[in-house]
Amino acid sequence: MRITVTVDGVAYTDEVEPRTLLVHHLRERLGKTGTVVGCDTSNCGACTVHLDGRSVKSCSVLAVQAHGREVTTVEGLATDGRLHPVQRAFHENHALQCGFCTPGMIMQAIDLLADNPDPDEDEVRHGLEGNLCRCTGYQNIVRAVRDAAARTRAGGAG
Ligand code: FES
Ligand code: FES
Image 1: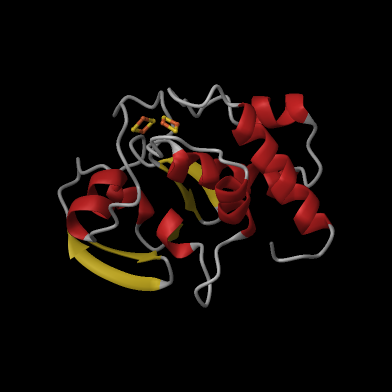
Image 2: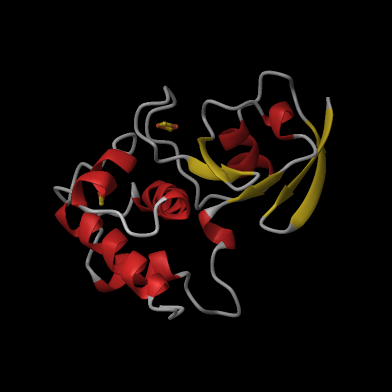
């Protein structure tokens, strides 16, 4: 099937098999390897991207379902060489170790903050419960999300 998907602001038209998962299309056809596969079974959240501005696990979406829609990956967040505030907060709060979960965590955190600009710790943990991290114990991830929220509310770009 022929699909056109806008990814990180660029429209791509490709032939795909109907069974192709969005995450595989992003990585293997479009080279968007910043989006990673942790489980392939919708459990880990590592593959989280935004589809029309809302987070989805891209291993649970077919590429054909993204036809005519906009996908944002972690690679599309920085603007003019400046990290997104959530990326910056993860960096400054040491919210990663191996980094494998980080792209999905960041995409999910942005979606969470769009719904709730001032989440408390429990709300952050609840919002990120579909994203697994094997390294950090989550403490610094929660801290980073709340830090990003505070900076954004203060009007800073990070
Ligand atoms: S790879 Fe998609 S949820 Fe784990
Ligand atoms: S930093 Fe390694 S899985 Fe989260």
